[in-house]
Amino acid sequence: MTKILVIEDDPQTAEEIAACLTAGGFEAVNRFDGPTGLEAAKSERFDAITLDRMLPGLDGLELIKALREAGSEAPVLMVSALSDVDDRVDGLRAGGDDYLIKPFAPKELVARLEVLLRRHRRPEAEVRLAVADLELDLVKHEAWRDGRRIELLPMEFQLLEFMMRNAGQLLTRRMIFEKVWEYYFDPGTNLINVHVGKLRRKIDTPGLVPLIRTERGQGYMLHAP
Image (cartoon, rainbow, N blue to C red):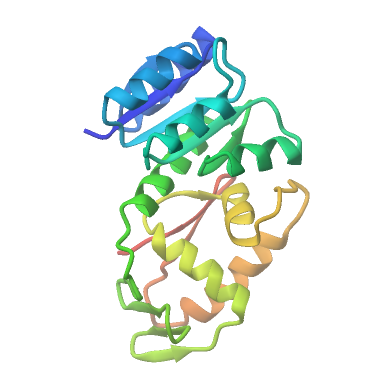
């Protein structure tokens, strides 16, 4: 079973995160301050870590720096109420792999961890992705479906690559916006809807089984039938 270390000083939040992870099929191990969290991360093997930014005894930024200096490559999802751009940038530069702002939807926390785990396990030399009869050549920047080449704009290619790398996983609009466009998500924008719509028209042409699924009110999923 995938083992996740949860370092969170607020007992209620820690319990909520652990419950989310357990419901998502993970094993959760809780630590409630910086020093014991760092000790656990160094002494045991975890597939991923969720890390609060503000911790007693050792700040989250210092903890992750110490963890990276010790050679740990476990993906870290920082979970914090600090939402300013500078706070998020500091967390990522310190060694975090993703940053989730409190309060958060439980499904998004689990989805972000699933994405981090899939990315962490991906072979370094991967040059081609395939989902059902959809193929993406990462070197030639070409896409094919059912033997037919698909002309994609650069941003459409990046969006499709992100969706294919995480096929079968729910991708929220926030995740897509932050990972593909690398901007902080604006809830009022319809940018994601527009680009996914254009991509769907190119990928799911008449006569083919639709691969791009809309999860109403949540996001999108590239689904292999």
